[in-house]
Length: 318
Image (cartoon, rainbow, N blue to C red; front, side):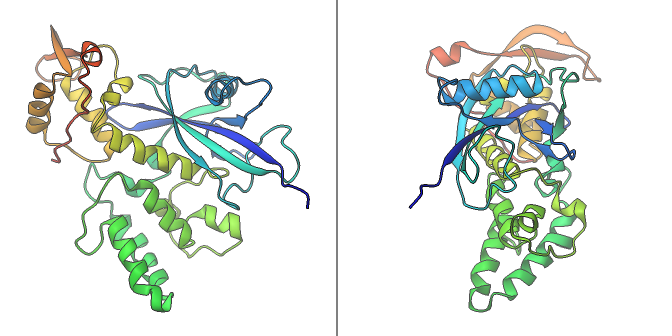
């Protein structure tokens, strides 16, 4: 029996954020479809996966990654189709994709490349609750998920329970870290456009604005994984400061945390918890750049890393 060749793909979710939105670095294929920077791992040319990833990101976008961490390895049969361009990958190769998460404090100029910084909520519109629960959850997604649940016979109750837990239906709480669980449920229900593409199933008629913009290959699944990882990690590690400039106001910091979580926070409780965390220090310099009365500039206490003081930021909901 002939063994199936394997090709290892490397994909990067590079995130920048400000008070308006979190942004991801995306590429575009020949048809204009969005994807993540990606390429094939070359066992001879790349000493490590990470070095290979950095090479691909720079070649495709001009961006030089700073902080990166390995995210997950994806290898589900059928979920990689159509395969992202992997150069000289063997014909019929099974694609194993290794995803990485990268963080940067600024959206650098990438205008010389066929790449763009995009608001990640364009791909996941149901995830942004900063202005309240999006209507599309209850008007479009929930009814479609109930129909899918009802059609499963004896499994209807189990499917409905999964939908309730994932999307906060029928009194269940919304848990922001369950980003991947929500996307996977939509994929399994045949609601995600990628499910139609991968299995030739007909997608139920729903407004495209409710389903979010699809991405090539399995890249929206990788992005959902990165979103959930980052949303969870900023609560127990100070990684949010990788997204901040050297000097910032507490309002700017709060707004970046809110944009990542897709949740509004309680201003006084957020600042009170931040003061107790010993993660930031005031510089005694004030700015009016944010409007209103002057606000003090702060910096991240890098000394906290040497002290072994590594909490994340607390996120009291507003």
